[in-house]
Length: 161
Image 1: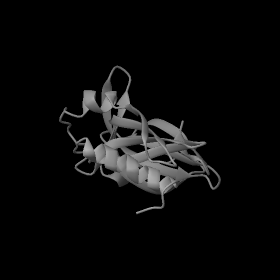
Image 2: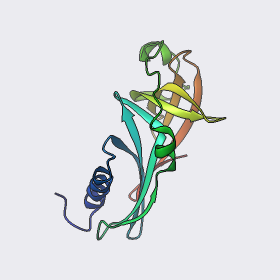
Image 3: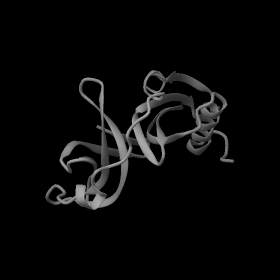
Image 4: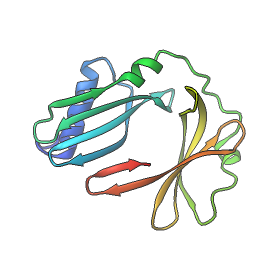
């Protein structure tokens, strides 16, 4: 158990809160600390595939671990839907061409939301250009790059934009 009043303690508290409310299949995606408050974004994991449309956002006190806010609309709206999680392409086939100057750090299969309340099965490629890190999303069916986000990392957290 992490010491009370630390970021690991607040994250443990968040997972315990979610588990106590019947939500135990979540993975921490992003978090941001501001003063004594932690905002953590979790996404559902289904058969090893991270499902970003099934998000839960918690606001917690770092010092006490108390939940201050909860947003679970996306999770409640999308989580009951069964998805086709079988890619047509392997990660190697989908990630044939990375943006120039970027190198691959890791990859995982995920589902991302798209316009019109639709979803796409993708390979999420964590890449770096030596200074900045970014997430690129490649269609698991066509290999086309369909989205990207820069990661902003600081002592206060990791957010994607």
